[in-house]
Amino acid sequence: MVKKIGILTSGGDCGGLNAVVRAATLRAINEYQWKVFGIRDGTLGLLKNPLDVLELTNKHFDGNLMRMGGTFLGTNNKGNASEQKVLEGFKKLELDALIGIGGDGSMKILQKLTKKGGINFVGIPKTIDNDVKDNDLSIGYDTAVDVATNALDMLQPTAASHRRAMILEVMGRDAGHIALNSGIAGGADVILIPEIPYSLKKIADHIDNIRTQGRNHALIVVAEAVKKEDGSKATVKFVDGQVRLGGIGTYLGDEIYKLTDAETRVTVLGHVQRGAQPTHRDRLIASAFGVYAVDLIAKEKFNRIVVWKNRGVTDIDLDSIAGQSKTINVSDPLIKVAQGLGIYVGEI
Image 1 (cartoon, one colour):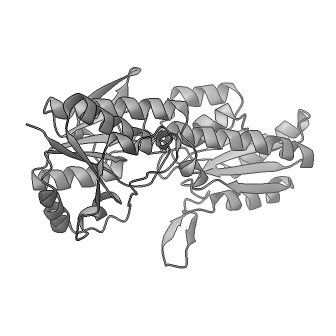
Image 2 (tube, one colour; image 1 turned 60 degrees about the vertical axis):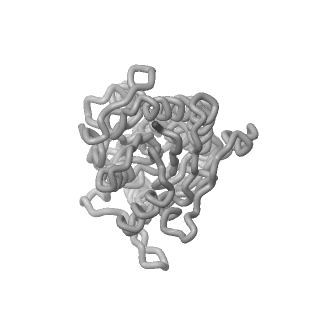
Image 3 (cartoon, rainbow, N blue to C red; image 1 turned 45 degrees about the vertical axis):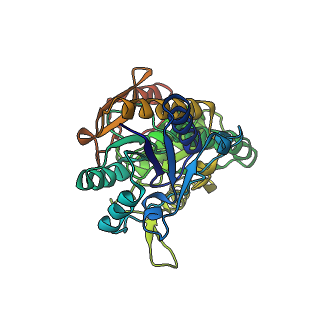
């Protein structure tokens, strides 16, 4: 019989994480009278001596926490923790089950870890990229799209005032969901995503065509993982030696200026998309996921992941999706919408 469960957040942070921890905790305590332990900094909390965990109670959720971005438990995306030491930490806690909140990469790691340790596990998808397979909505995605859309709303007046082509670089490591959705909602003229190749000449022609129609400015949205026209990645090397995606916006700005003589400016949203106050939709999805995950544990249905499908919550086998990404293909309905609006979305 389940009496004690753990919960952790893994991978990058996003809006809605505090709401899902709240929902799972309240359901576990109020409905089942279980003890709930929040593990700090993802699996890293299990490496500490003593273990860095927090017993969660109703008092931790005073009404303000669910409105805050980030995760009050902390998270980790380094992926370099010792499996054996993490499992030893689980055993010390004497948990009956674990809820892990993470993206496709985190789910693959947690799936392998919990199977190896014989840990009863339920996953909850969170990722601003919304790229977890067989899941329509992940926690954090709606907030990220909202931030990007608001950015376009603010860039448009200054673009028109100065007759500029404004380029907005948004997150999107492997998939272009944020760029495509915010671009349509924010009235972009060009949307570039990693899944579809593009032509700089076609972008230039599109901007020139906008000019001939009497408009003096343009808005361009590009996902950070979009490659240069020659297929090479745009990356930035940081002082700690890490090489990360970044710089595609600047590259496009320079190339567009050469081809069109249009003054360009680049805005990189970066982690602003992660740390924003969660939207109502992310709070709702998070709350529904948290309650459902606890109920799965009560039914002893493990190695499952909670997903949003057909406007409701359900669960699927974790083995079927762990480590797999949901990307955009050319037949996606929103690609057709973008084309119908006259937006250049690449060479299709």
